[in-house]
Image 1 (cartoon, protein in one colour):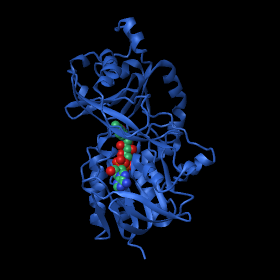
Image 2 (cartoon, helix red, strand yellow):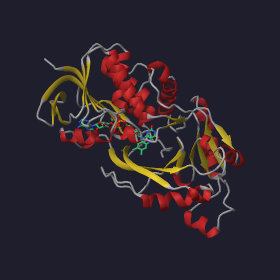
Image 3 (cartoon, protein in one colour):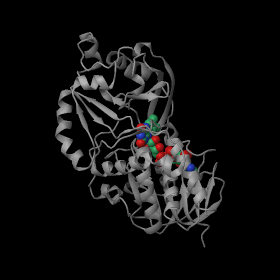
Image 4 (cartoon, helix red, strand yellow):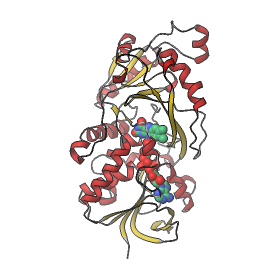
Length: 407
Ligand SMILES: Cc1cc2nc3c(=O)[nH]c(=O)nc-3n(C[C@H](O)[C@H](O)[C@H](O)COP(=O)(O)OP(=O)(O)OC[C@H]3O[C@@H](n4cnc5c(N)ncnc54)[C@H](O)[C@@H]3O)c2cc1C
């Protein structure tokens, strides 16, 4: 006898989207959602940059994000819930050689229905008023020191943009709980201590207060904390997805005083610095390649000054007038092998479902990933988008799916 049919661990956007899609699919089981924080969406979902794009190198990511973008565009209408959907585009500014490579990849994007515009340097400057594509205006010693090169062109995705993942996560949970008429329960401030696994099968969970709960299935949607929970439950070695928590920081400055800067797309420049307007301010990030795996969440103003601000000031004169107003750090659930999600039912542990390893693209893939996980939990198979290639099996079978456009 089980207490629930399904337990979902994690109150972020992946858990929320899965519960919502279960309710949409007419799931009749009893579901319990457990979140250790005092509110929904207090993990990585709340700390995300909220970007969405279908510009990827792997077809699975193009499929997941193209589907998700269509759903995010209709989110407000479908759920009657605002998520700040803003299709302002993504602009990857590239050096001459990378731009030429991107053009040769253009046929793949076209084949996968990804709309791309290849922009000449002056068109890049038009999209981002104030940005200087060249480096002639920079003291040669400075450009060398900062490793800056001229922008040879831009890859622009008109279907890309930004939204508020936290609002979407809460919207998903609210509407799902309403839609499931008493069959879905949410418990906050409830930490799962471990999963009970026996003879290759999931049996139940133990909470930190010692309570034991039984359910037929469990879905671990614990983001960057997924492996920690699996490990303490006895999952070891190659049975663990190759995922580590990696600190990623975001910074808020005021907007530079440049006419039209408030309408620029999400723009990616030198060394992966990315920025977009966030209300009346500018949100800026850059993944530090030297970050070590761990749960540290300290934001570092010095990193902004040294690794971002100097370059920004040269690339967008006017930025020197902007001040760092706030900053925070969150965790990527980084898949160290191929930078893609690892999801599905665990092949060695019956009824244990999980989804992690999104490596910085989990918010934008949540609509599709949640639908896939709901279909899997309900019917035992993917129905709409086949996600079997994202199974942990790919690492055992040495068939990784390397995604290279990761920021
Ligand atoms: C700085 C930053 C920028 C990002 N930018 C983007 C972006 O532009 N676009 C994009 O698509 N993605 C981005 N991401 C990634 C995105 O935020 C994540 O992929 C996504 O939010 C993951 O959602 P989740 O539901 O899996 O995890 P989370 O939102 O982290 O939710 C997991 C939840 O599980 C709970 N939990 C964990 N362990 C337990 C336990 N034992 N018991 C009970 N509860 C538990 C946690 O408290 C948490 O609330 C960014 C992330 C960061 C940090």
